[in-house]
Image (cartoon, rainbow over all chains, first blue to last red; front, side):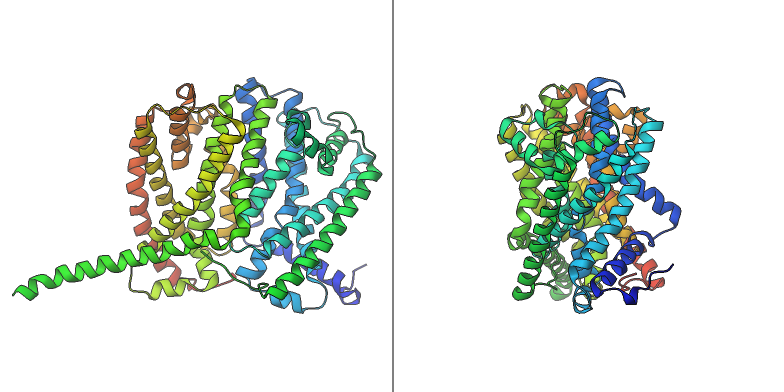
Length: 274
Length: 283
């Protein structure tokens, strides 16, 4: 049963076309095998940095702390796809110069951002799955799977990732050449305040409160619980859905406002190169 | 007779001035950019400190001694330079092609090496502003232990490190010239794997002798190793090779990489012209 795109609402049509374009742009620059290696190399290196840091201090490759940071980092590799949406603006505006055409075509530009983010989300989820499998098979990490909890969690992670994508692509509309700094800087913020590689309790009191208020901290812990690492966090998943949806609506509002402002200021297709 | 003897000297002077103007012109854009793109400043200066903080807290979580914080901070500072090498040196000629500037570089009378040198000088300035911000914020917030017993050696090592690093950036830039979208993906790929291989957040000697030796072909590995030995309390125990050896290797790299960049650029230019890709966009 093939889906006929022309029958869909223009925004949905744009979403699916952007999803497909995202897949093509990310994957068709090389051979499938090299692309597969590429897909794994970055997250694998990122987790190996942590494994080596752990080894330098503890002198071994096992322990609850390793399990904690390994799973947290795998989760982060998925969420990071939302922050990477800042690159979509750089691509559309600076390199491919398609931002005006995409804006002028039927459907909102926001659908395009969400489509491109969803493609990245799929790639990142695949990388995270391979990382977790490698952790189980190579490092012998005792991971399990609470399938029902994971199935509840995946849409939630997609919602949060989409919200992040809207926030960061909105910021990128006003920044010139420098997508790498938006991605790196914002990743650092999430890395520090979301209990990704260490528990929020490690932070000083004020920062700890920031981390505990951050829904991503609870989402990270839920992800760990779904893989049978640590206890279930003391927050109901329905609450997390509610908070994440509010966050998504704020993201939609902020993106639309920023987009209108960029149009008004005449900087939507600005090109800055240095 | 007098005029004839002066002519080559005058021409040489004019040529040097032309190249210097090209270097200044290319560097100027970057020097100015840092105050024109103010929205990026928090992302460039403040937020990278948070990345450093995350690794410092991870070491605290693992029960590491306080000097590991200094180790991470030095890694965080050098990250700024490495990102600049990847995104504003190596892939720069690719961006220039995409924005249509590359044709202008080929048409202008100055050498393309002057353009690369101008990019490097401007890039060093931009990165140093960012790196200083990260360093000062990191030192003030975390009160990390730092010792400067031999300031002259620190300065020599730092200058040589930057020269070797940007020389490598110039070489990469010439290699990236023939690539299309691969350039972006390769820059992306050279981030975390190099953070891992060069020991940005841990002593490189923990990777073992063979891997650390391979990693030493990347100047940032020796720069990090040397600076940690000179600036960290007890840093010499974590060192992979003695600092004077790092200085010797980095000096050789600082000469070799720009030289290779010169020949590489000429070769890649010919290759790109032959393949008809020198001005091709969006491939």
